[in-house]
Length: 249
Image (tube, rainbow, N blue to C red; front, side, top):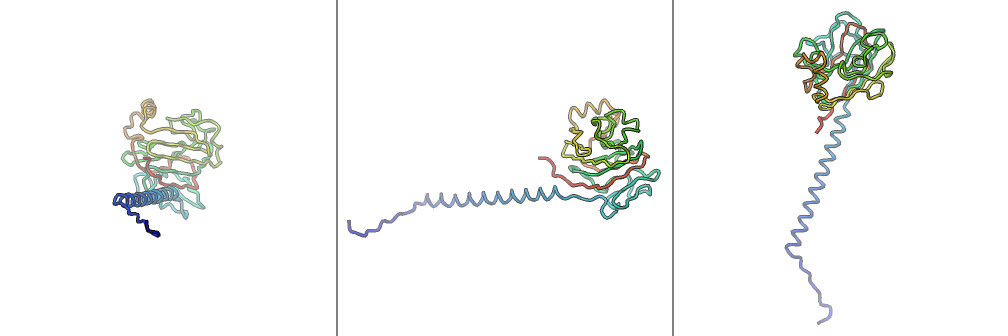
């Protein structure tokens, strides 16, 4: 063979096709990865959007149940919402929430009673006919404090609260309420004390054995208002904030 002969290598059409397919697959993987990152970032941003429900000492986020106004029995000052007047009426948020996390602090006087409602509708004449309630109570001086089912922090009359978590009358108590789909979790003073699943067999049995059995709308709404109860006693709230959560997949 003559010296310095050059060898030429030809690329077959199949090799070209394989290379092009690899480029396409790599591009698609990068695109899907970017979409996933954007979706994750959006979800994180979405879940971090806390709303202050007493911003600037305003009650703009609230109204009375089945009314567009707020009675004179409720007032807010220095970041504290207080029920002091007679016939103040139950408060509800103007917005409705399905999946959410709510945080607040509450304080009652001796023998005080109130509550936090969620997924409340206005189809019934009273808020408690549709909405589950996180109990607010001075356990030491109110008769409902004798039973864990109706003590502070309980899912009122259905799921008991443990003893020794609530603070005495006049002290502030921290509440965290998380509702995701049918799953409900309740914290009192940084302790997870109640968990249950709306509509579960256990839930239905508890409801059937309670006074709620005769209330067909109770605990059925998938979305609704947050409510603060006027039970006739002075009660105060502060640091009320809420954030929407993405529905569970």
